[in-house]
Length: 76
Image 1 (tube, rainbow, N blue to C red):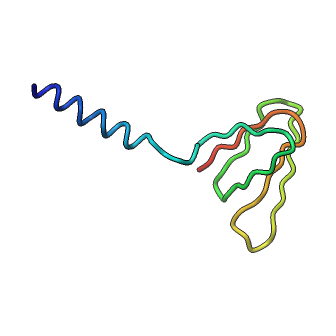
Image 2 (cartoon, rainbow, N blue to C red; image 1 turned 60 degrees about the vertical axis):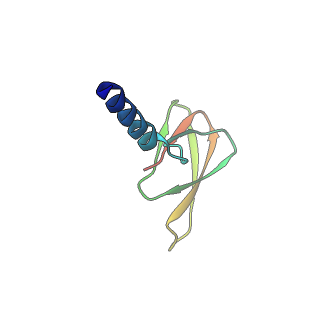
């Protein structure tokens, strides 16, 4: 009985810690705008990837657009 209790508690903790409404990795789609913050990374997953970055001075966020190829955003 004690083992079942420990298993249940550990399972609940793992599920609770792992559930996050914000995805950590996001595969970009061409021509879509994505908002990124300081610390986020855009990783090119194909050699032909071209990414446009729009940043306004004084703002914490930037907008990135995948022009062609493949890329992934890794949120920090």
